[in-house]
Length: 313
Image (tube, rainbow, N blue to C red; front, side):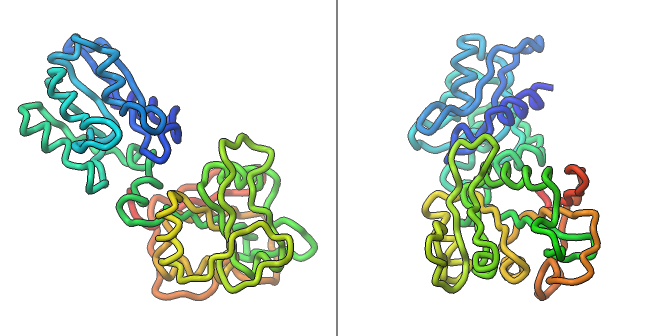
């Protein structure tokens, strides 16, 4: 259960270490007693393993360390965690996933070489906790979530209605914006709706960057950033600016372009219980077909939110 506790600690502190990943750690004595716990501190602070080791002190010798991601093996703003673990006398370590960062990974191998018993108990939920960061460091681009609101017959506009979906779905969208580093639409949506794209009436730590992809110019008074380059180039540039997560709210044309380019990591389909009868379809044409994984559904007021990922975690 201690790995579950480490995952819970990281989940409760999600985002606190940005732009670093949030990691949870628990140190347990041979008799099962918890000796120390920790989560990664704010940027420049200690990693979760060091916080837990400090809490456990000398009792760490001979204990087991449960951690949500393998300890780092490089010197950044803080010393390598593997050195502190070896020095503390930890006898066993159980990690929930490996580190995709080429500069920091290899911690488990280093611990094995030091004579520590190492177990990799891979958990998909551990990867999901830092999924945006993992894409950012491994692919050099933000994790992209494509959010679409549709009628039951797959239309993105319902005649006579301003909104396709209900209030609960719209509140969820503002929560998604608040949790994203950037939000984007296409120029067609900009011209038709003049969206603000900010997070409103929800708790916000920092507002996302607000982008428009496509050919300009932007309408007078628009506060969006215009991105006119190739999608891969623009995402690479955003990643270089520290954007780890992008919420795409664009229409059928932009959504299809991202899907065809292999740049959508998650699809969120907010389906309203209405038949529109006419209007644009949810996505434009693209080839080839795209297989999705981990399909799930949940209620949002009268709507249903379908979620699927491009790749299995």
